[in-house]
Structures are given as C-alpha cells and as structure tokens.
Length: 161
Ligand SMILES: Cc1cc2nc3c(=O)[nH]c(=O)nc-3n(C[C@H](O)[C@H](O)[C@H](O)COP(=O)(O)O)c2cc1C
Image 1 (cartoon, protein in one colour):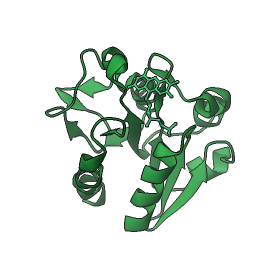
Image 2 (cartoon, rainbow, N blue to C red):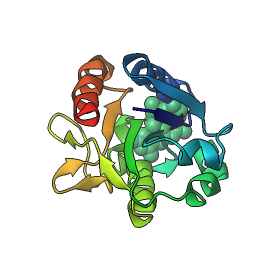
Image 3 (tube, rainbow, N blue to C red):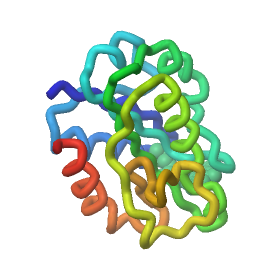
C-alpha cells in the first residue's frame, strides 16, 4: 500500500518518530513545509504528524501550511495521526494540536485509524480522546520516551491490518 507521512517538527522529536514509522513501512516522508496538495491526495493511507506547542497549539509549520490539508479532498480516504508532546506543565492540553487536526480530517470525510489506550499517560483534558481512546499515536517524548517504540509498533499493527 502506498503511504505518505507528512509531519511538522520544531525540535526534531516528531521528525524522529516519523522516520521510525517510515523505516517500518514502505512510506514516503514529507515535511509539511514541502508538501503539496497532490502529495496528500494520491496515497490511500495518509499519516499526519504534529507536536503540541504553545498551550496545545499546532506546531508553527502546520499553522502556516494548514491550507494544504484544508484544500485536499479527503472523502473516503484513510488517515492516521501521530503526535509528540509532553512537558509536565502542559498536561491540561496534552495532544490538543492533534485534536484540531482530527476535527479537520474527520469533517472532510476521512476515516481515522490507529487509536491508542490512554492508560499510562499524564493528561487531564485532551481534545483528541474519542470513545475513551486517543485518536492517534500519542508519544510523550519529554517524559516517557522509552515507551515510544512499543507504542509505535502497537499503533502500526492497527494501520497495517
Ligand atoms: C515552546 C513549547 C511549547 C510546548 N507546549 C506543549 C503543550 O502545550 N502541550 C504539550 O503536550 N506539549 C507541549 N510541548 C512539548 C512538545 O510537544 C514536545 O517537546 C514535542 O516532542 C516537541 O516536538 P518537536 O521536537 O517535533 O517540535 C511544548 C514544547 C515546547 C518547546
């Protein structure tokens, strides 16, 4: 299956996770700064990666380039989301950036796959929880980086199915 991973990253954590995911599946890797609508449009499985920055806001490149995603036809497409986040003083908005991306792709008719159990995470009010689970791969690179590989594998198993 053709897979495209589009990510944004300020500090490199999300890029690192994107590379780990790409190394396990046959995926094309694109920074959101370089992505064009056709890149997002032509793959059956689109994976979007975004860290939480500034009180749960989307990372800066995702803010600037969001129209690429907004202009893409996603009806009937399969989309998976992943994010890196953390910082002890951010637990109230842990993964909010992903919640906003989830809303955009779901409203455009995409089917979101790859959910993660919330057990073991430190958070209070995440907007990306759906039916009691994170609607994405949630990586806490600041506090729980040793758990990331196992979380990637469990999430990828759902996507590959
Ligand atoms: C300026 C700044 C603001 C952050 N704000 C949040 C936040 O609101 N919520 C959260 O869960 N994590 C927050 N974090 C933690 C980052 O999401 C985490 O370090 C992530 O791995 C960074 O990804 P990147 O290296 O790909 O940019 C923040 C980090 C920084 C540097």
